[in-house]
Length: 215
Image (cartoon, rainbow, N blue to C red):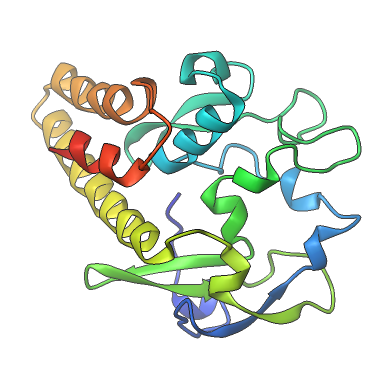
């Protein structure tokens, strides 16, 4: 989910690469799950997140829908997000001890936190979000190690491509609605949902499957 504001307003004002050190180490969030209880519907899931969750849990997208994820409008497009538990406000993937049950294949936003991404000039850099994580005495870690993502270069390329693809899609939807063609706008959004989310992914190379669908 995109956030408005200047770099200085939302972060420490610096831009980082994956090889940089940043004070984001939270000690495995031991004894803390506050960020997993206060995020509402902001944990938007991208296709790689759905691939990871469905292939690791051996479930379909539709089996997750209504139980662990829900659909909402995000940045002009209908996209899935993590569903919070009723009453507690906690993530549906938290166990009774407040630990993540899918930590090894958790969504990108969760893996990134308390970092964010700052997109410009067709690419992005990492930022350290301000006033987000409540963990004290965070340690310095290399972003690449902190993320713990295999083949990070391929992942970063995909994330960048997906971000700008969604921006183009939002522009198409906005243009259709401005012309009074709400049915076309809805069709574009539903095509994105079907092609990149509801259509099952196979175990194997995600990026190959993703870029084949992009064709």
